[in-house]
Figure (cartoon, rainbow, N blue to C red):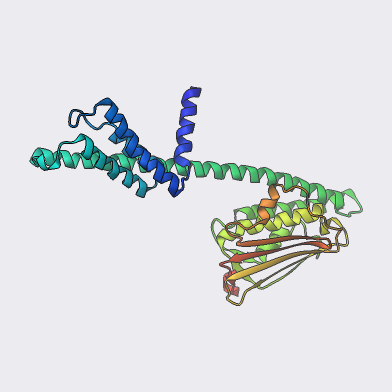
Length: 327
């Protein structure tokens, strides 16, 4: 069983691997030359046995190479087969039987190549989905740790209630805001996100009073940018509560955004003020991946200014939102 599992894993890795043009050219040549040499060793006389190694060439070429190189390996192998192992084409009598054999041969080649292409595409899609699932699991674990850290920070630094009942009510309200922000992680798969609502709900667990000050026009964020933006702002808020401006009662955050004159590019600036002295982190954790350029966030510039962290983000595809659209 372990041997079969190892062979299966090796085959999947070979199908998934992306090869450069040079590697594909070398593999294409090997698929033409090596089977021909094998045939010459087994039976050098032309016409005495089928060119059996031709079919593995078609199959492996389609599985391991891009379509262009696979077709090149196919015709190269055919050319070698006719040159070394077939009787002269001129001497072939093209009767009905020969035509039927030719048509069936072409159909078999097409069937093998089509099956191989479908198998390769399926394996690659499954591999991509598996990698995506692993990424989601890592992000889920990181989100869970961050949420626990935020809850701990909120309980340690507030609320400032005079009795247990008020403490419970205020703390419950903050937990509810945190849960609503977590629900926003589903936004982006169905529709555009609205600013400022998207930002307001995301920063609600961190915004104690007016400690995160927002300014910017009403606009619509493209769906592919909603999740990255929510995660980035949530990560900034988490770090601000744990280490930055929001960890100090005197600290606050200025979060503003504006559309470029072309009306397509949206710039957001997160700037922390009045907090403790900032020092750059020694190690980059999972959260650092959220604060970098990625699909949906075309540019992210994060700076650890001693006076306060600031982060600028660029989203392409945003547009101004009319009152009807924002309703």
